[in-house]
Image (cartoon, rainbow, N blue to C red; front, side):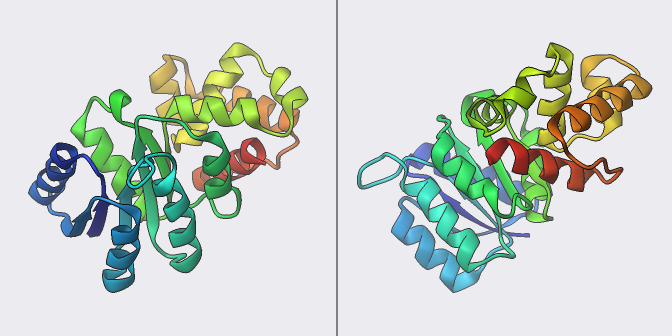
Length: 214
């Protein structure tokens, strides 16, 4: 699997290169700014790009804006935003049209290398990988606050795990409840949010993401 990394902090950038190379990924380029990212992707067209949000010259949202452009120009490429910050406005745009193949993880909340590698692989394969905190911000910024307000605290937990890409079995394990209870919560969530039910994990995640991101 071919990867391009865009990260302006040299230690973090080199750490990601070593981590992914040691696990069999082909790191085609590791760059420090959005312009270099665009050039690298145009040259090699990787399977997935790992992109920080705040990069030179202004250190505000260059990476996220570049991610949106790259998704438009290279629709088959996965994008995993890897940052310390949640930027709701551009994250909503990144997810709005085609959430498949998009991830958004927070650096200080990724404690396990295997989880990061799994998320990157899932995004490269057209899946989703969203930190629960990112999902929470999107939900609070979403268009149907009335529908979301009707969810119980447990249903909100289930919704956040659904948006991460977890199956019913994965949600049950995370919340220490039975799969049957999860199914009931999922059915209630779909009903309250006015979403069509689906047994396909990826489809239901995309439906939820479209809802909460507008």
